[in-house]
Length: 371
Image (cartoon, rainbow, N blue to C red; front, side, top):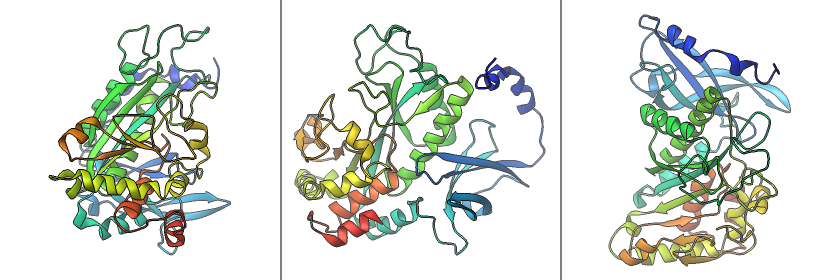
């Protein structure tokens, strides 16, 4: 048996006995945070004397951060969820990472997002994100694929054992998110077999980022139990035209109201003037992932040029057909990559659409979005 497969040989049924044991009034709280890569998540668990009533009842905790040198950091709880893995009254808590001066670590973009959302609160900005992901085995090959590769048509929302792989993971992740209190809105199979999508939202302001990060954590934990790997790589199979994105839907109270289409079109006009700035923050590597992904193939737009249209999916920003018909609601920015930081994406949208950044040569805007 290989080292990689040893953990998969553990008998999962045995775990049920230990989870059924009484633990008195104690509560297990698992702290979850974004690491130095801006992509991966880490976690550790501690015991509290009783069930916390809210986020203020969960103490800060310390950990070690590796950013060239090992430094001590503080984990600051920001949002609490139920724990779908060890069940009530246990909790999952999303944390921000602060340095010794109690300043947010640079790779954690929640605090800047909170600040910006406070400046635009009167607009009541709503967000929803569509998270695509791909399942792989520990051997690095797409989960469930035959050795000779796929021999059938690839279509989204497919049904049938000869068309999709991994539906059990999709279903269990969905249920676990609902139990946790994550605002998951739906799910579906994507174009590739073993490629899936779930949607989070609508949420107002920073809440969307909190819920999406926790949904990602739950996905990785569910995949641990099934012995597979969930990849958020923007182009999970390099020799394929198929990619993974995290499209974001955005609206304000004006966009959602009667005559809102004019506000949608004005926001898109502003976005058209700041395409390169947004591309830089729509993946964690300054646009390098989207350079591989946005090739104008398979419902993707151009990496270099901004485009928009109604009821088309090969554009940077789309106005859905039903939005055009109703004359109000929201628009969809299709450029964020699957591994994007939702806080950075939301912040960029708000800065451009609501806070007056208007041009490609807007130095203030460049500094704000790059910081």
